[in-house]
Length: 488
Image 1 (cartoon, rainbow, N blue to C red):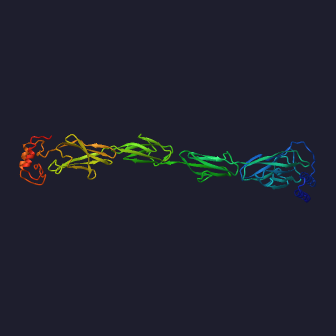
Image 2: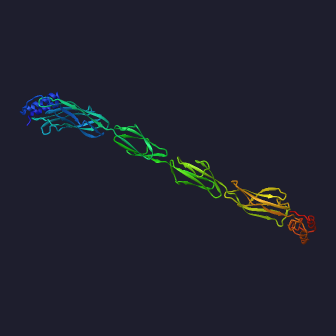
Image 3: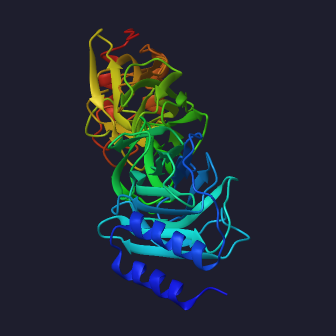
């Protein structure tokens, strides 16, 4: 059993902490004498005792709790030690100091020292074997629990005021310090789609708490859509705080562009490929297909020219108009001529009506009756619309001269396409050519005489040659005056 005076003296040493080297040796002597364990004292020239931080360098993460050991490899037998530990308090926090294993198997006295996390020190750490005993095998003096602060950098773990004794004196020592590095963090950026991400600051690693601004830059035809991983949302630019390794994915989506086709005229446009929307850089072939009676003319808008088919490259929303022009001439049909009955050159009693039907795939703008007169002259008269597509011309004067006539009908549509009928001939007999054979002969006089003495309204029959309502001698005279004449 250890005498109470020994414990009292050890307590005084712990409380006073005055000249630890002298006190420690004194205590060792007291213990030896009281236990009557007499060991010859001598100073040897053995190899130095190694006192070192283990591991010599350690890398940890912010917030991580870890252990550092102060180890010892004796150069000769030892019985006690004392030490002080210094560290960077902005990077490390000391939690506790535990007795090491070097004196395992012996009764020991151990003082875990005083931790000052403001100054970054652990002082008054010591231990010794009570009673007889020396150690020459390597082992740990103390184990220190640290917690890495929320920071980055490297802190030295330095040993100061280190002393190691045998039973009589301090032994030579070699001290090796260590370091603890609070690792920096990586920021991994991956891309979903086509684009890039800039980092500010742009570094391989970042210290704890560094704020990094990320800016997503979309390639042409793409748009930034969102962040995933250790970032979320679609704010751009955005920032991330480095309190650990981070991984971020920037997602880009392709722009979708529309291609609007407008048709001017009658026709259609095919698209190849035929899609509702297109991505940046897609090439679309446009083919204009004219309807019957129409022809493709040109492109306007985001395409120009008249090449057909033609391609367009989608690098934005596009609008194209295909212009078709009417190429079909109006169709003229149902040409009919109706005359007064009896036929008469006298404009008071005679008339001629020419009618037709004109149709067009767009619209008819003009219909003209071209009359070629017996004397070689001609004149154009506009035909009148009666009902949709029906045109006529009725005149009492246009055909008031006896002779051979011909006419054509010319029609034009709103696109200036025109069509003309074939020439139509007819004869307008003179009033004295009663049988309309082109000659005044005895037969004409016979026709008058056959109705001699008859009466009716003016111009009622051709035999009333003077149109006075009576067939009489004047009609015979009028006819006989042209006897033998031919008029065509």
